[in-house]
Image 1 (tube, rainbow, N blue to C red):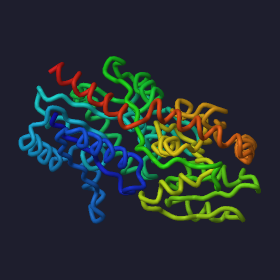
Image 2 (tube, one colour):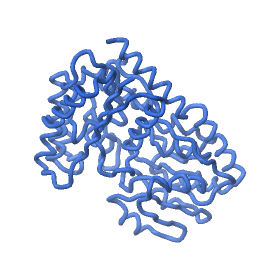
Image 3 (cartoon, rainbow, N blue to C red):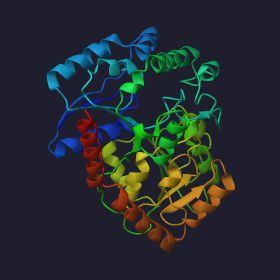
Image 4 (cartoon, helix red, strand yellow):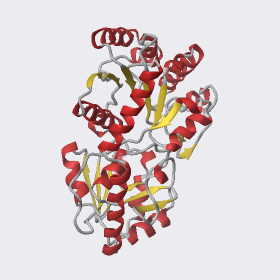
Length: 378
């Protein structure tokens, strides 16, 4: 099957879980013998703010490029991931009738400007099911009213024009993400669930050493809660970078080590030596790739009880769930990791979860089934 994959890459590069999910799916399809062409533009550093804003609403250059790719590759299916900021929904209008379109929704960008349903540290659904003017007033996208206005205008324009009706099948990464899109008015028959996956990894032996945080250092990720709740008996390794790093380092105390941004090739070794992975997110998460990678390595996860995370982490089985920002709860859950036998047991269950639900083979079958379904419908 010939597949054209389109994705507006995040500037965080390999640190972006979504960027890595897209690359993994491309590799998965190519390894299975499918012909995959792809275009994954990112915003160049010297691009003007006006150009970025106008492209978010209607990118003529992106439409031109997509039309060329369609002529050259004649895909059986077009698969979209992130549209913003480089592509814009306008590229959907470049696809001629008769070519099926699949779009993965990794987050809540089509209803919420920051894509997390989080504002000033609290869950906020003010823009769901309505024009996102509140997100503009509160400068929810990148703390910028102009940027928020551009993204909000793009959503309003393309909702009005019916651009998103050109997507044959939306694929949510979790039931929670699907449910939020249905609540916002999307026809339930047009959106299914297709989980992410993780490649096989060398399994952890023993209970592991330090607790590991792997991700972007920004307030919505909630790492400050873990730092404040960390028992003295445990160590914490922090792999990642971001705008919140300097503030987090002011909380630095004995037993906490900031590694900075790490190369993707170093992640398996970090997981292999981890006692657990922590995901203390404050906002709604869809399906963080780091949890699936931890499970593939036989490492349990301690996560916030928000968004799609409870679909992955079963409390007391393959990890622990804690209410977000519940410092005593985080302290208690982390303290239980000091029990080596319990941590081994949790790790075995984490690996079993990956084996049953999140292997490459399962992901390939699900993706191919969706492609066949939309292609037959055309």
